Length: 149
Image: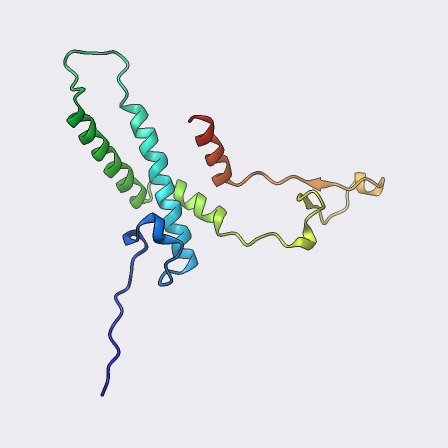
């Protein structure tokens, strides 16, 4: 009698970010959720880093290299812990935005905007009414990140 070996259930948080997308043992939903959580952790780290910047220099502050490394490690762990707790909630927003099904081609206009399915006064006059959707939260967050670099 031959018994197939049990495959250990892999958790998305155990997979390094660079191998997350190509991992066949994770569902697409798990990949999106973990990528969103990791992105939230990066944003939280940047926020936490900026709160620790010294405004007024002091002789009592430890500005050594080792203190900087320690602060960076603590900040990274704190950001990761906050993100894993789900308390911040930004990862859920990213996940929701990334997990939406793509818009069908039949509902999109030639310029990529959605054409409204209801008729309005402007459509009766011969001018089509275009609905301009808000950009995705993830797209907005990335543009904010790039603007501050």
